[in-house]
Length: 208
Image (cartoon, rainbow, N blue to C red; front, side):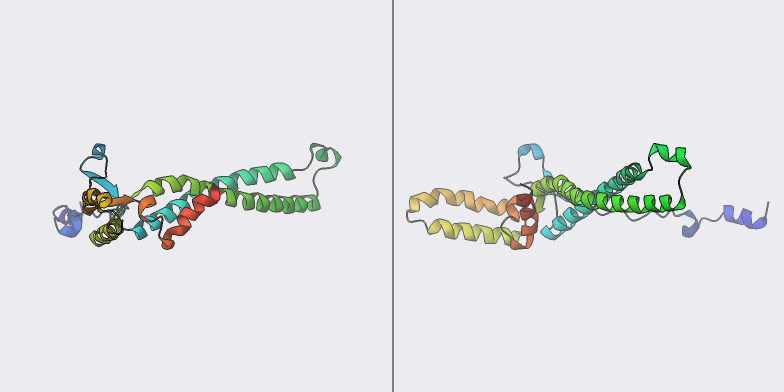
């Protein structure tokens, strides 16, 4: 055996004994403590996006991936359909087979059919991806920061105090103050009135 190979057998240096793994893919959602709003069946923790921006980024990635997969499948189907539609009639071989001009015409025909088919498929794929992603992201939980909760509580208390009869709001103060314990909200509750994310909710209205 080569002496250098014998030496390598006794090499216990970090560079020779350490196995390098790829960095783990970061979680798009993380566990956070539940609040009084959450169902007891949820347990002590629920999964939530860390911010509205991370929620929006994940939604767009979901829509993009499903659209790409849909278009990939549609491309295969369109190619088969175009080839079938543009193939020469069965009797062409009986009169001498295909000529060069016939082959060129078939190629042009397949290009036209393919382009028309994919144009229609892309529009349908965008709608399909949006439908698949919209509901889970509409119901997804997003972390609510403490300062946002405090602003929400102050706003609600101010609206209660403005009521003409104190008897109507005194009993509700406890419910409003309990909002301080909120740790998360669903996207449909947290972002529905935010103009920054109206593109998400308006997309659903268009499909309806």
